[in-house]
Image 1 (cartoon, rainbow, N blue to C red):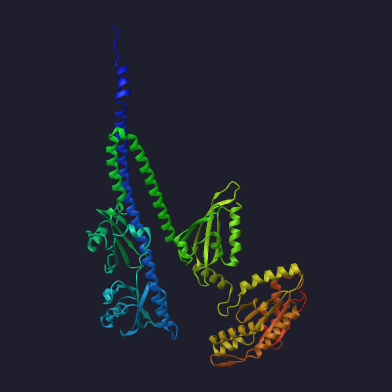
Image 2 (image 1 turned 60 degrees about the vertical axis):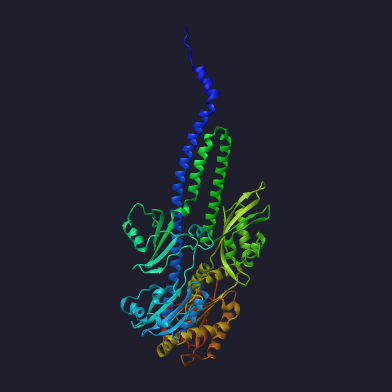
Length: 638
């Protein structure tokens, strides 16, 4: 008798009766596992976000506070130095002007060595009798000369401000007094996503001896929280300074709080921060509740498809929230680094300009609506062609992005600042024409001015302001190249002050410097505009004028004009009337000689003028066959 098999029956049962159940159970277990994993992952993500956000917050606050304190200390140090070094320095007017122009500085007090208030200017009223003058004086006269940071409440003044003290010492070591600068600390998180994140945080700023400079900062609408005391905070950091639980940035999770600590570089100040962990657990709580709800929904087989759709929608919404959160972080990062973002669609002729870009341009978002053309119109006319050329070079494919520095109109006044622009095309149409372009700009006005100042100092004499020898050699090469192309000569006029050593020996070097400046002024007034641009000081009392496309006769005429003007105008220096004369040597370029040979012939002609009686102009021979002695030999003969 054949054996009866049961497989077809089981297959029928699986196929007809229990398939949906098994699928539902499998889906249930899978979804439950997924939700459990997502909940744990979200919890870890929230904790890590708490650490990252708190670390970024305390770093931003620390950098902001450090820059304000260093600025205040530099102001105090400058006041101490200028009050000692510069005679009749109007310290009160200078400091008052600085304080009125700076949002962080709110006042100052100047104490003399006897403890009397010499000057004071503050935006708040205070009782001068409660100021612990003797303690302030003793801190800087007896203990140290480094800056001291104090809360104004410890000085008996209005709370909520910080004070920076600096001792004033004369060059001979005499103690002259103390300058105290008062400052207010602004919130670097204002109007940013981080302000909402850390609304319930507690901040404390203390010195190394645990004196609190700023009291804790806590949002008034947050409920009562069992915060760690200052002693508990410091004990925690002392015990866990080298623990693996401490993040590299000085941030740690402890109980229901994120604790952070930061020591300000170069300052005896530490910042402590406490942030409740529940401020960052919103997504975790939402995910946990969703897991429970989803588990119950999946049990009901009839709602399986609806649940699947719902899960898909939740995933999309979660991804959208993450994208929006990423956009906010990107915007915050751009705003924190002082950059503005613009995004322009050429096809739609519309775009986006970030709020920080409007702030950098000092224009109101509601009053002015920027377009690509109006944005370009704010670029200085002298720089607009370079801006267009940089973009055209990028569009042509020669460069992957454009980058340029231009001047732009800022605000409603006639004010121009330097900005750094960078960007690239991110979308192209079918004809390879730009469809969408994104760019960044940053205000580099102060850095640009410093760079221009350094370039100016590298090519100019610090005493007279004239171009120096380095600049002369550069201009001489250019004029020489022009002469070779046009076949027209150029000449050099060397000037030297007669008996200048006697002026220094008789009246002193300070008086000699005055004479040099006055000679430069007289000479500049005697020169025409095109001649004045090529007036150089080679060193000491020697000067040279470079005259492109002029022969020796023209150079001699210029030298004679200068000589007469110098003779006709006695110089008054430190109460002394000094009669000054100059000697001049003129040499024109001939044949194929190099500029240094022409300068050597002009130098030879100058010392011929001195050897023949001074106060005269001498022309060098017009041939290169003449043998000229060494310049040092010529000086020894005069």
